[in-house]
Length: 247
Image (cartoon, rainbow, N blue to C red; front, side, top):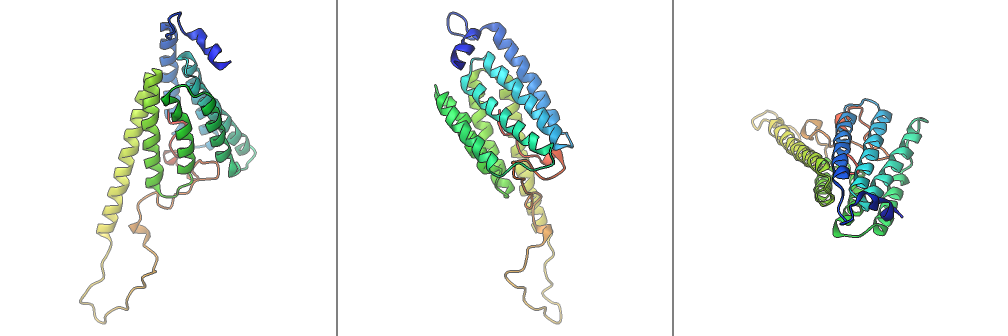
C-alpha cells in the first residue's frame, strides 16, 4: 500500500517528478534547521518536540522521493520520540526495554520494505545505535555515530536527498572533531599529571596498584551516563547523543 501511495510522486517513466524533487529538498532544509536548533534546547521535552518535527519533515521528504524504507524508518522514529515524550511530561523515565522494542520494530518493518541494498541502512543503523547509546565509553558511542552517519550519507545519495546528505556530512565531521578533542584532552591531562619526586626524603610508601585514577587523568565524557531512554542525563544540550535516525 505504501509503495502504491508513493507512486503518485513518480512520472510515467518511473522517475520522481521535478516538483516532488524540489519540494523534498526544501523540506530537508527546514528539517535540518530544526534539528540544529534542537541541540540548543535546555529542556528534554522541547528537544524531543523539535526532533519529532524534524523526523516528520524527513518522512515527507522521503515520501516525495518515493523512498519506502526512508518513510518507514521515520515513522518508527517518530513513534519512539512520542513514546519517550509522553513519559517525560508525566515526570517519568521511559522503561529500559523501549530502545530494544523499537529497534526490533525497525528491523521487522525494514525487512518488509527491503527493495535495494541501501534499504539495509535503516535496519543496520537502528541496531547499531541501540547498542551505542548503552555504552559509557565516549569513543565507542562516537565511532558508532560515524559509522551510522556514513551509512546514511550513502542512503541519502541513493534516495536523492541531497540536503540531508550535506547535513550528515557535517554531523560526521563534527563527530570526528569531537573524538580528536577527547584524545587531545586525555593526552594533555596525562602529560600534566604530577609525578612523585625521586629524591624526596623519606621515600614515600609505594602506591597501591588498585588505587583509583585521578579525575584529572580522565578525558571529558568518561563518566558520562545515558538515561534509560537513550537521551543523556546532562543538562548541557551540546552533550546530547547523536541524532538517532542519523539522516
